[in-house]
Image (cartoon, rainbow, N blue to C red; front, side):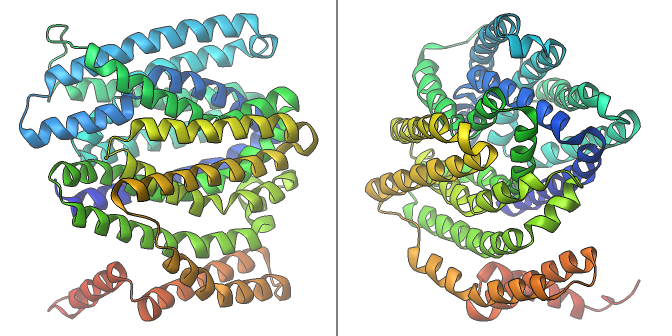
Length: 485
């Protein structure tokens, strides 16, 4: 499947990642309340740790290996079964540790029912084998399957979640969504490979498995550790504030994460063919797309944070406003990190460099967590996340510059920031001087942001992707019969 088709399907998938959470979260946040939402997110982040331990470097290794085998016309079966077996062993180890922790740590034992649901999610995540389909660039299948299962999930939420006591059901439904996806994926994989023990070679996988795995674990220290530590040191309400503050950020970043996932196999192929000029050009285009998308969105969400929190969560979540304002610039910071790491360092197989950089960020994150969270609570978590991810970004950019003489186009970044100063002033005046209605404020601000961004990218920056899309759109309108219904 070509890159354009992959981007098309991942765009559909990404749009669903916007729509489905926005359909569900405003409802469950109002029904369950901030404390129960915080509890669900606290348990889920603990389970995420065990998932990271079980997966280690499988996602990156599998993606790279499947893409390489496909490009070279090699049978996928041996590589797949070796990766699948290694993942089975690591998942079993993680599951045993999870069960032991559940029955020895009082806070987890109090919620052992939800921890057992999390154990199902741990096993389901192993059977998802997303790395296999992404390596094959089979994004059409991923998109159709995911949307179908998410539709079932949304319907189930509105049917079964009725009161604040249904928080365990809510978490179970989230787990079942993963489990159903996993079953479908595993069955469908038989179309491409045969599940067998013969031909398995684990020895060559162990080194990258642990090196990349350590990177994933230490990276999580800058993200999920904040939530887990916040839950242990403070309470579920503070977790609810923090996770609500990061909810919109996570939804918006999913758009860009989808693009970097699509491009990883392509970037690996370009490097294997020694096409460095095309590699650099693709990095540049992705960076410009990030600037165009993230900077206006950051400005809008910071100014309109009180209304956005009220929209997505309802009353009672006012404590999430400040953390949200602190977190939103992470769209740009982590977006640049993904470009540098996922599109740059990972295809270059600079696994050791990635691990060292992430370890430095993790040490800083843990240290700041110990110092700030007891006093600043959810606000401290937000600050720590921004600081640690910024350090990781700087280190990744230094490494990329050293390896292939590629760096973030700083001039373009400054130009984008300066060009969006008028938008900041307009939105600030609109938000503070206009008080017609709640919905009018949010919609008018979003409309102004969208129109300003389109005009800026088309006429000032002359964004080639936007110009190409616009030209195709108007050509389609001029075709005979274009106006017929």
